Amino acid sequence: MEVNQAKGLMKPYHLLIFVTLFLLSACSKPYPPEGSFKAKLLASFCAFHIVQIEDVDGKGRGMDWTDPSGKQYKNVFTVKNHCDFAKAGLKVGDRFTAVIVQEAQEVNCAVCMGFMETPPLQWNIIVAE
Image 1: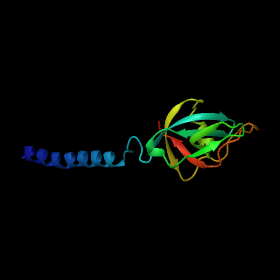
Image 2 (image 1 turned 135 degrees about the vertical axis):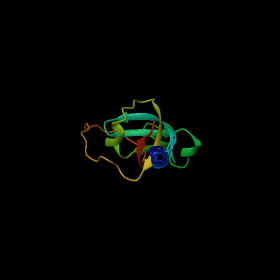
Image 3 (image 1 turned 90 degrees about the horizontal axis):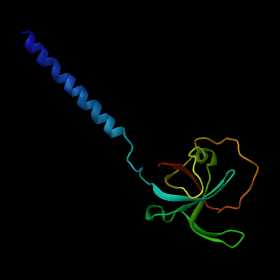
Image 4 (image 1 turned 60 degrees about the horizontal axis):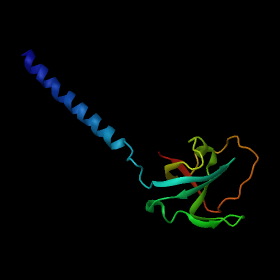
């Protein structure tokens, strides 16, 4: 009689494991994130960052821009959420995967008082990789 009771306990335990694994797999983020694109940090100074989109998944999100010295850039934009972006620790020339987001997570952070001319097109982005 005790053997039958033990077998009866195994079924709910297996169901619990199955449900837990299913929920964990359903909640995981797709990788790379949906809507992501490859990019390169072209310039960075204080709170100003110019990013160039490097793949077809990001085409149409950048603009062609000429800086005041006459240098031309293709498919670029300015990072709007400089506080969030700075946390990624990227250096000029680094390539990364980015996702455009609607709002910045952090809007107040310490920055230097410098200025750099940047493209007028701005996006809030997060660095995914």
